[in-house]
Length: 295
Image 1: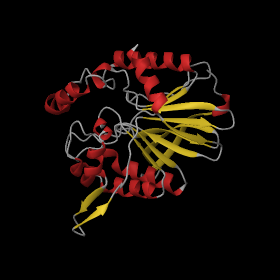
Image 2: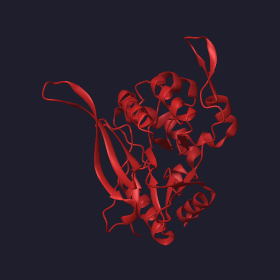
Image 3: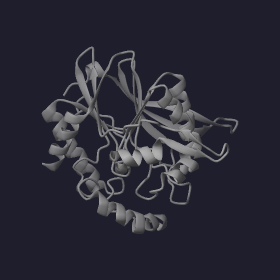
Image 4: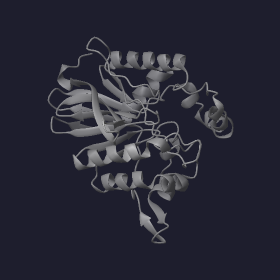
């Protein structure tokens, strides 16, 4: 019941955009940018992410960060995160300048609901090389939900992080944050799993997916989300629940693209060719035409 209520609230208050066959969007979630310490699980994929973002910027995509972009539970000082991942934020700044950047908040960066926090941390930053304060994302307004209306068929896609209705990560997020920051942050380094995280708990993951599928069936709205860290692209006979996966796996990063009227699951990996030369490769894992998706 709580999940249905929270998703409905998010749907009603969501930012609305219209898309068509000329629209280009890339959705990444659960990047969990940290401070480049041993607990920063994203650090190993920073170069891969920069390559992906440069590709999407050059090809005219709008970048939607579907929550948990910055790991503010473990690293509350955003200055350290920005400094650790300067190359990523340099590209993101270009997206923002071109009005092609939408930042959404999840449970791990729920502080972005606070406009004062965003203003004090994300509007400007101190450039250590020029020794001056410079603009970053001046005027940034992170959102909880996004509603996309596909103009040719009037189909709707709701984009949320996916923590809505997850008790420990929604209603009790503060207690979960305290436990992670002062206990699980260190315990997972030696192999222990945080039971409150759906990414580490298969039962929680399935429960979330089941509850979200019920909402989709009832409201006849497609959904793109993250949170569980498990990529999902439904078959034709399944409910249209799409999950971006995450950007902290050792195998690479995954995301959802919308382009040419199609929705696609993509993966970015570093692979070696026959000569042993490493290169970044984008692979389309699955795809479907939006007009062919039925609920």
